[in-house]
Length: 322
Image 1 (cartoon, rainbow, N blue to C red):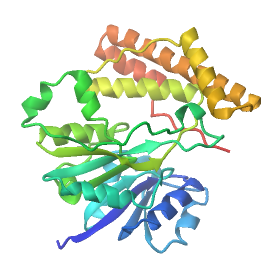
Image 2 (tube, one colour):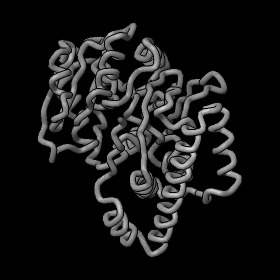
Image 3 (cartoon, rainbow, N blue to C red):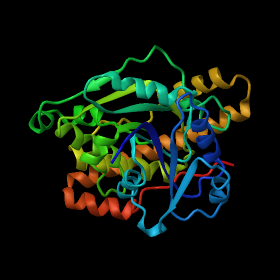
Image 4 (cartoon, rainbow, N blue to C red):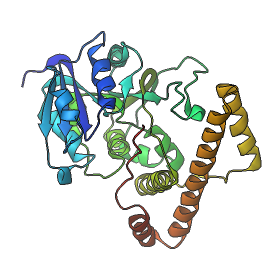
């Protein structure tokens, strides 16, 4: 197969309208244009397909909704392309700058680099949680990780394994070779961190370059926060035996939340009250999920499996913003 020295974009999609418009347009405004944009749709009914049909650079491949899998579905991007690089993102993420792909591609001047992961940030928008608004405190530096053997990786502590595998398919550029050698595993959650784990064990060099940013945000409620956090703890434990330390929301924490909101929202009392209640609610739910995760684990891994299935089932779906 003759490889083109270019980039194919792969986006799994279901009911992504209208957010996907910003995603696609941001990609088409890049200084290095993707040679194709591959959308793998799993049953959109909200206008997504009608919009994509108006964009000639997009190729849509449809699958049955009940066959979607976070890992296996993304592997289709390899089958549907022949480019030397594949950029993976999601329907509600959009590039912060028009040099996103160029910045990521430049990282591959690093010898042996097989993939590079960027950063996702939240814009300053009153409809998005002000506590999550992005404020850069320093210039990012490239980070590269490589381990001499599978044994060397396995000797790392659970905490370090989790950190170096904080991979994120919201914003990643892969060499084609990397995905041909190690495909995404069947996974309902965390296919990206599982891929990073196997890549390190195979001796791959991976990089993080947080100058390459996309806007990405999920509105939450207590139910979503509980399930997302429990699922995250659960799959990180399965992958790395990692159990974090999480503290309950304290009075000091609440004061800190309030001060931050006042600093960022000024005299908008209504917005301050809304986002204060929002953050207290989701942080309490997150801590409750942590408590139940720890309690379930103390009774054994099989019990943890049962509790996760009962409380979470399928990974939660974020709320739609209005």
